[in-house]
Length: 142
Image 1 (cartoon, rainbow, N blue to C red):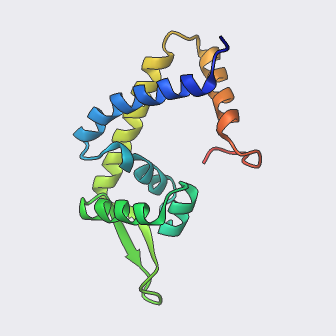
Image 2: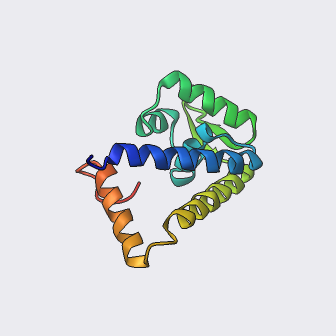
């Protein structure tokens, strides 16, 4: 039987989900909130529309998640005085701590999965996976 990227990706996803769920809970987050914190951390001042578009999310789900993260103290909405309906998203101090925690969780899981590989193979694996996930027009990591 041929080896499948889809199957291996699903196995890695389930493993990361199981690992990160417990670790994120310690930070006061759930797995579904992870991409929001990461995106706003990398793109401070983004709008909800940008975030929703870039993460390929449903508008309603995105708005509910943003509202929960604001209510939980991880995000703030900075409204424009000129246009009260439009706002930008920023991490709070608590959000910054959560971002650092998320990076630690990701790094520790990565190490646990790749520690059996020599560093050259680790770099090659990342490069190949990046090629599989990157749109053809993307030249740098988002």
